[in-house]
Image 1 (tube, rainbow, N blue to C red):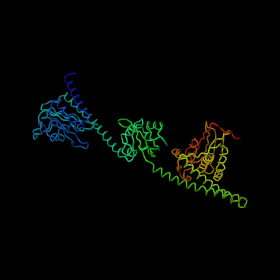
Image 2: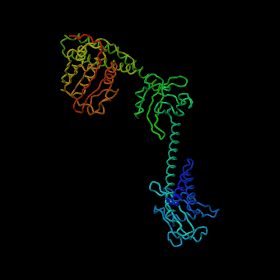
Image 3: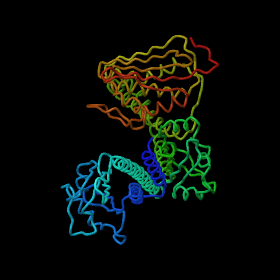
Image 4: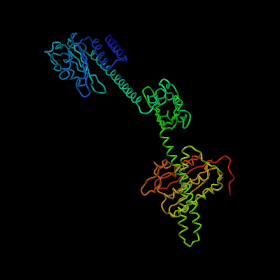
Length: 527
C-alpha cells in the first residue's frame, strides 16, 4: 500500500469519526465534510449546494467566507444555472475541469474578481435514493490539480456524506414519529397503559394516570394484574400468551384505582412493534354508565316478562277449559280453533321463559334445577309440542333414540325447550313437504342430540353468528323472527357444560347438534 493510499484512508477515518458524533444535524454534517475534504486535498475554495425536492437551491455552504477572502454565495449559485454545478446536478456524475480557461463548462466571471478564472475545478454529486440532493464543488488555482487519487477521495467522501445524512434523516424521522406518537399517546381521550411482553408497566398516558389515581412513577414497574384486579374475567396466562403471539384481545374486567375503587372497564389489548422492542398496549374504557344502562334495561325487561307470565298462564288455562267444554258441543271446528289458540299461548309462554333465562344466564346466575331425567320422556314431551306444527306444513318429523341411553341430571324443562326451539326453527325454515329428523346417541362421555332438516341451509359466514342474540339468517322470503331462540339454546347448553354447533351448506339443509356431559354416577336405564 502506497503512502498516498495510507493518507487517503487516514483522511476517511478522520471524517468518519467526526461524523459519528450523535448531535450533528444535516447542516453540520455538510459543513464538516466540506472543511475536512478541502483540508485533505489542499484547497481553500469550495462549496456544497443543496437542492429542494421540488427544485431550486435550498442552501449554500462555502469553505471560506467572503470576509476571509472567499467566494460569495451568489457566485456559487450562478454556477448552478450556467456552470459546473448545474452540469453535475443534471448529469448526476462527477465532472472534472482540468483547465477552467479553456473548458466551455466553466462560466467566465471576469466581473467577479474574487472568483477563480484560472486553474481547475471538480463537481461531485451527493446522491440519496438515486436522486441528487446536492453538489460538492472545489476549485484550485493549479491546472490539472484534481488527479485520479483526489477524485477517488472526494467521491468516497461524498458517499460518506450521503450515508451520514441518510442515517440522520432516518433518526430525525424516527424522533419526529416518536414525538408525534407521544403527543397522540398523552392526549388520547381514553386511558392507555403500555407494558413489556412480561406484563410490567413501562408507560401510562395522562388519562390513565388520572383514571387510576397514580403518578407515573408509581405505575412504572407494576404488573398489569395490579391494575386489573383478580375478579370477573381476569387476564389469565392463556390470554396473555395469546397477546404475546400477536392476537388482539377485548376483555371485560375491573380496574383497581390507587384508592382501591373497583371500576368496570372494557380493555382492548394488542401487541405493538417499536424500534426498541415489542410492547403491549392496553386501552381502558370505563363502562360503568353502560353497565348501569344495561342493568336498567334488563330490570325493565324482567319486569315486563314477569308481568306477562301471569296473563299468559291464565289464557292457557282458560283455553284448556274451553276446549274441554266444547269438545262434545257438536261444532267440530271450535275445538280445533281452541287447540290452535292453546298451542300459540304455550309457545308465547315458552318464549317468555326463554327471555327470562337468557337474561339470568348472561348475568351468570345459576337457574339450573338438575334432576334425573329420562331423555325418552323429554323428547316425547317435545314431540307432542311440535308435531302439530309439522303436520300443518305437511312435513315429516321423526325421532330416533339409541337404545340404552341412561337418565341424566339436567334441568328437564330447560333442555326440553332447547329441543323444542331447534325443531320449531327447523320447521320454520324447511319448505312444505320437507323432512326433519331428531336423533340421540352416545358420543364418548357425552350424549349428543341433533336436529337435521332439508331446508335452504346457512351460509358459512353465519354458522357462528346464528347463536348470537338478534342474529338471523337473511335471504329472500326468509321467515320472520327476532333471533332469540338459538341464543337461548347456546346459553342453556353451555350452562349444562355442553356445547352446541351447526353444520350446513347452502341448499343442503342444516344439522344442529348439542352435547350433554354424562355424570360419573349414571342412573339405571329405564326400560
